[in-house]
Length: 330
Image (tube, rainbow, N blue to C red; front, top):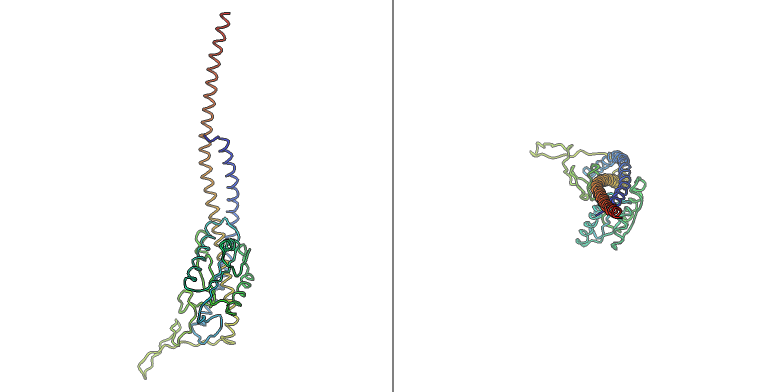
């Protein structure tokens, strides 16, 4: 039978752990507000830049920027995975690591050479123990990622891509949906993907044909030939499309990496808050169960003590009776 003192010690220990998990939940609930605010502030800029680049892709031809056109032969692919620097965030790291591993297996099965960059100590430790060759590693960015950090990472990616070290760049991160919902996803960084004609996706850019139908396209009827032609409106860019792309595409890549860092940070904080809330609730359930066991054990101890006292009283009563009889005989 488990002693009441041992159960009481367990209850005290779990209460101490509960205080820690509750404090971490409160800290995470404060941080998640800041992380959500940063995402809401960054998303409009990223969406506008993306729309502008898609607009150029839909209405322009002959763009030969090295960051846009895909390579004729794709031999090497760079995979970037974003994990956390700390634990106690549920299955957050396990999910993103599983996605990175599946992506590596997919690329290797296609006969491509994979290079791996990892952001976050948890991912670095995991892949290092499994003999993965890491090209670049970045630590201590998950707490409060800055745009300068994203710019440094992006410049390294761009230099390696332009130099021909890699033929495609993919980033794996966790997209923040809500505090309790976050999804792992992949996004192509280089060559710069475009969403053609308003469709969603990460397909690589292809030179558009002459007749691209857009919401601004007008149908013009030619009476001489009895035919209908689609006329795409022309846009004038100053100083030139090349200059705009040369200055805008790096900023767009910076934004992709920065948004991925922000989304991952918010997802990590949300996962940690959910995990700590679950741990606190589980601690309450364990404490309730231990209290019931403590009451039963204490009741058994009291019953045993009463039985011992009663038996001792009966023994003393009989012994005192024998002592009284012996005195009368004397």
